[in-house]
Length: 567
Image (tube, rainbow, N blue to C red; front, side):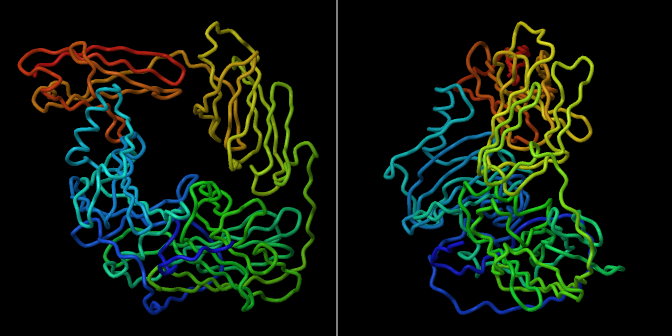
């Protein structure tokens, strides 16, 4: 990876989440003083109260890195959010995913995205609401001219909240370097206001024998190891290591990602990861770097994530080819220089390594375009979609009554770097309305979830992002609309409905009051409730009113319900 020059320390903080583990290592911790101050851009904190984080930059999330810092707001919404420097508001959005969102371009070469706000302020709030009624949509976007909404450092630009896909009140702050478009860690800009004397702590290690090239404890499958092993770890051939670890901070119980991970074997560095920046399009590489919550200390051949560095000429993989102990040492550091070490030994033990047995048609190579054609199935995986070679555990089964066969592309999920086209043929094409068919992913327990797709000449065509298990299903059942506490609507001035759909999910909704458009939204996507705050400008007070809500699911099934209230 070619690191870009940046104007602030690259000793940022923390990193990713992980899962339970088992292995052989001892751990020691020490506090390391941070180096001399490096001149850096000055920012005002977003809040005027002490800074505490609930999440940090680069934590492991599903299919992506956590792109910023999550500032705690004391469990409350409505805290004034301040501009970090002089600049201007560049984008204003309301979305189901991030709630109320405000982008700010600063004059010092950075921009921020403020997510999960509870409200905008001043003219922006009025402008957004007018646009929502004009477009008859909760989700709206405004791109102001640079001179429309200038801001000064410390100016209140919004109120913190819990909107969008948010599990509790907080401010999510992304910071983007304008020159590159990279997401960068905001923590160094607030270092002096953060209290942290706790080093990262490891919770386990994992070893990956490479297919057909290595074994661990006599087997050619990955193995996890606890902190205090009771048995020695043996290996032979080519293996990769990984670690599960978290960072922690003073006075809070949250776990954070680890900023820097360095692996040395027999005193020589073989790998390091430094979570300081990433580009948006690098997000899905997280699926290659991580295994659950473990961070791999080697680089798969199709992984182009710039924050990973291998220095042993073998992508960080370790060759165990002598019957002797190999000394592994991990060094874990956070942004403030707190450091811990993890030590374990792998004993070389000469063991037979069996080649991978496979049929050529099911061997997908990471550096070429791959095709799979079976009766009723067509799949194209272009070059660049796989991070490493995959030997598909392919199978097909027929469940009586199903409209299509169920195709297992692989026995466990293999993430793809982008969407790939797949076609599944219908066994029983019985519906006149073809829009009711959908491609369903199938879980290990047999549950189904909608992938979408369109009907085309006896096939369902869809784009998938994982090699998993798929079939075709039918959704003809309309959604359900449930009023929540309707007796309180008039007193609270708030109408709340729950829209539910068992198969393809809620795709759209539209509400009216007394025949006029009513601004229903989904303020918090975790609850999923549809909420309308009654506004005397749009609903006349002092009488009986009729609410009509129409909800449509992912296959076009529609439900309309009427409710009455007095306000």
